[in-house]
Length: 297
Image (cartoon, rainbow, N blue to C red; front, side, top):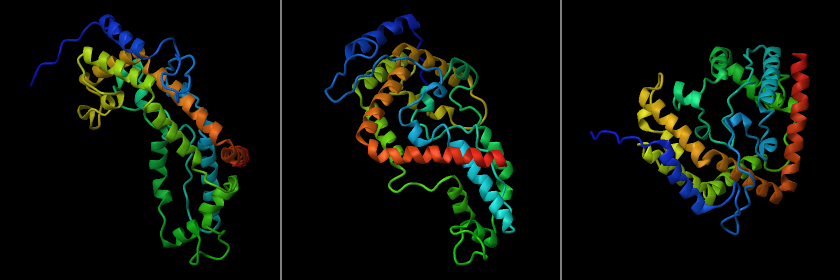
């Protein structure tokens, strides 16, 4: 096995990164380098995904989804009990958001890199789901009450208790309620191929290469097969993650990525404002109804 390359001081790496970035754009946001690329404005670097608010978040229910899902599960529980079946409700509040359009691998803090490497923070909902699992196992009779249908006992709501839970917070509007997610994914794809994001990725990769690591992008560093498996992060992983943190700061990769996501999501909203309007109204209705349900519980 070849010995690892000696690390170069990051002061020297900064010169390489600065040159790469300057070749692609000028200023903090810079003018678009292609006619169809929107201006990014001022690029600032968030320290965690919690600080990021993207334009499509309200249409995705990012801030209210956990509360809505918790309320739905409480209604399902009460409905199941009413018809002689058990159902252990789960409190989803505090759940790590897996549907966010941002990428966890772009948000590695110095503390996380030092203590956990690339390993994600513990999801508080996982233990709750584990404890509730036995009370969510359904036999044939329970399944009939949960989903309804011809075999359901008399008095079970149409569609079963699962449908009753959804109706309790508000029926979805006509049209494609998955549109916000489709648009977020489209904006993400556009951001990935934006020349300013690509320049920042190249700068990050050059910085990592000077530190002794060869990765095309941060997703490759986070998914390095050497970090696979359970248990705590080893010294190699934490060292790579700390270099990653430094290189992201030097290349402004995270800030540029978030700025590009914002710009392309705004364009998607402008083009789809009419179709998005009833979805936003629906989420607001669900939030109000969820608050009412949880207040009574």
